Length: 452
Image (cartoon, rainbow, N blue to C red):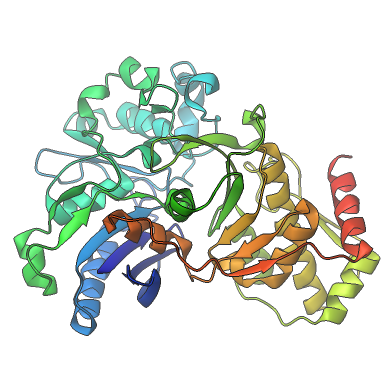
């Protein structure tokens, strides 16, 4: 079976074809994804994305028959639609700081961390804060809403005409979901939103075939099923839930680096350090932590890996050239620290790239420690292709690290929603902790510096 996975990331949007027989991507279309900075507030360009999705489905289907469609998107995003499925307000960009204007009012009604596992986050990173702000600032438009949808299910609505919600997006630091009771949080009832929440469906539910006009537009079979879909980092986690024995950890990398611990040691999560409870595709709570590592990488490198050599690695380790957090402040395990370089005068480009890679790995290690991560760590997404990141991650955890071979780990997990079995994908290369003392010394130097 060939599954077309629509993957809307914060930085890029993709449509990937996944062969369920081999669990490999066999084709990929991609575009940059940027918000529209126009009135009434910065918002996602859903019409441009919709055109891209339909064009990609048509192009890919001409090359290889598409048997099913699955959806995955970034979190902290939702849509308000009327009875005809049209948006009553644009889909707000979570990096817009408008919701912060009503922070005190929102804090008075939001559910506590103990109830939801959701930390209080800045800008629009709590979806509940977005909906609250939209209701207060645009009451007439909000009153026209017939349904509140999580972002993956906004796209399934457009594909099938069926309104639904799903727990991985509801449980992604929204303030809207109680993972311990598998029900909506007290905020939802306090605000009178429960009546607007579309029915909750499992991620692997078939919501229906594509709409007839879309079959005609794309050339797909009119009976092509569309699955409910899920949040992107949980898509990365799903293959491991189906095939791996706990304890293990998964690090999903993209704009955000999301660390998730399965079967790890019990720890008390620290809401002030961007730890949280995610809800996986099976409905279970997963201790998680994150930082904006992909964004930091882009800012530090202009988005491009640099040439480096083993001599660069030896030099950086020997002089302990350190990048300390945080390049992106306001989130992550060190939200209030300002980034600084130490012992880094006159680094050449290769050495600088090594130090940046080590910084990103050590931030990830901090996240894993905060959530009780144990066992081997699998890295999904772009950072899996960075051997310096992988080696430092292994050195600092003292555990094996597996670099996923897929270009985007989310696509495999999302495609598995269309599978009746739990096929095991190739895991990729396993890296064991380096034996040289210089790696351990570097880790200790970095960790000592961030504690001062």
